[in-house]
Image (spheres, one colour):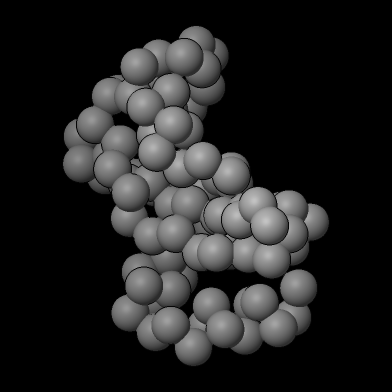
Length: 95
């Protein structure tokens, strides 16, 4: 079974997060840091590091969780996801 992930990257330079989904996080981080996505938000800098990953059972679930996290528009919420793993458990149950 292929694992799907929601990943959250952090840039020290921008002091900002980026949320995405993928089946290969390591490759995706390399792409973000290499400028592969020319016009994307992540192309501004090349210091993206993995802040958090969430393993999902399927891509549909990953996309829904990604959308939910983006809709929160909150650094505090993203930090809470890391500090309080029960939030992630509830997200997986919900989606």
